[in-house]
Image (cartoon, rainbow, N blue to C red; front, side):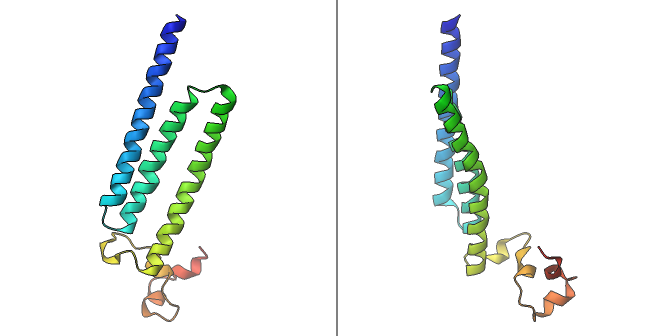
Amino acid sequence: MNGLVQTALEAATAVLLLCGAVFCLLGGVGLVRFPDTVTRLQAAAKAQNLGLLLILIGAALRVPLPYAGLLLLIAVFQLITVPVLGQIVGRIAYRTGAVERHTLTVDELAERLAPPDAPDAGESGGGRGRGT
């Protein structure tokens, strides 16, 4: 029975590592192929993050328990930092003009970043006055 459990564990590890590698590869292809900063952020934040998490879980299945806990701690740190980094890079890209604003479906930052004396700022219902 122990051999069957070991074989199932090795198969699960192989599937997780391969799926993680495929997601990382697709994220890398997305970084190269996508046309603008916003879509590249999606590839970097989503596919790369999922790929790394699958690889870390697959590796955690094969190592002793203290090391598995460390790998899971790395995964939690990754889940916390990647969305924050994506938000910061996206806002910097928007403010520096690297984002083609005419391609955006919804542009929530346009109202917030408009100068106070702009004609649209007062007519839109006070979007800047919400404090967020």
